[in-house]
Length: 113
Image (tube, rainbow, N blue to C red):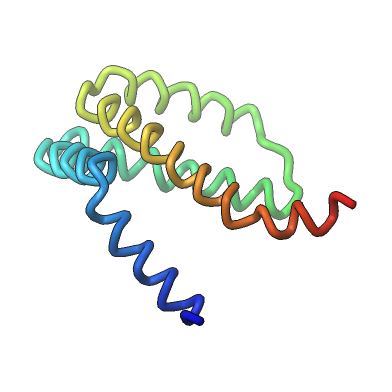
């Protein structure tokens, strides 16, 4: 029987070879090559992380948070390279979701008696 961690490491290596991952990687390189887009993308990531942390602490989003989110979203939408990155990330995310569904099947089966 194989070691589950060996299998997971093999999946990780195979993910890096997927066309969807390579497309995501190329799209991110395009963002990094555009200084304005890269700075905006990093600001967007940092802001999103901050909102997630607030949510995890059970804090409400302020009106200022909502306004800033709208402002950043508007700016992000203007950057074609960021939009392309987000499309590639969404396509890759479908694969991750499928893998998660497959991995979690034993637990779902366990509780579906």
